[in-house]
Length: 246
Image (cartoon, helix red, strand yellow):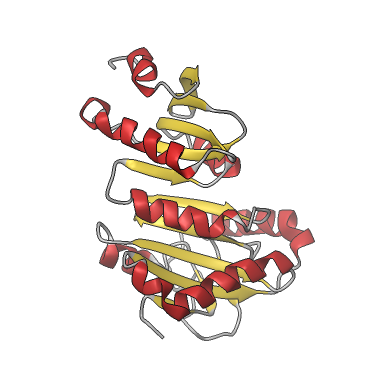
């Protein structure tokens, strides 16, 4: 199996994948997926892995994909997350050795502190640039989110796969522009919108732009999680003029 496609098992802390991220940062995208044996929809992720093994990985030359399996009951997700947060707080000032971290591959099942409920995935485009999709999510959008991220990797545009990822971005008091697009929007239209954003990269300076699949067509500028400017439609030039300093 390619070193860019690895099945993993054992216990992983939130920092376990930092060495891999640092190794590929600026050159590739890291996806870490946890499939759950209690979720039939995870067969779609398994199907994507089979495609990677059958040659798709060579076409996605910027992708590093790591995956494992969990058997945690999905209906206990809320309770598991709460316990994990308490444990994380308790261990905050302890060393990594005291945290009980284990080496890679010491178990058939995957246990990851970043997704304690054992169902979801993360897409890393940098050490501090990561999108988590956890617990309940649309498995159909999994492959598309990865392909979109890789396509946008060399540009200033980033991806938020869905509204849950957008909420997490806002909860973490993120700053940036979110272009929310409807699920029925054609790929040609999305590409056209991406090209329009690219025209204004000099004016955007250090403001990140995220494309997010949602319900309405809307562009918003958020500063530390708070909405500063909102505009319906697809006129990005008009929207940019409304941003302070734009």
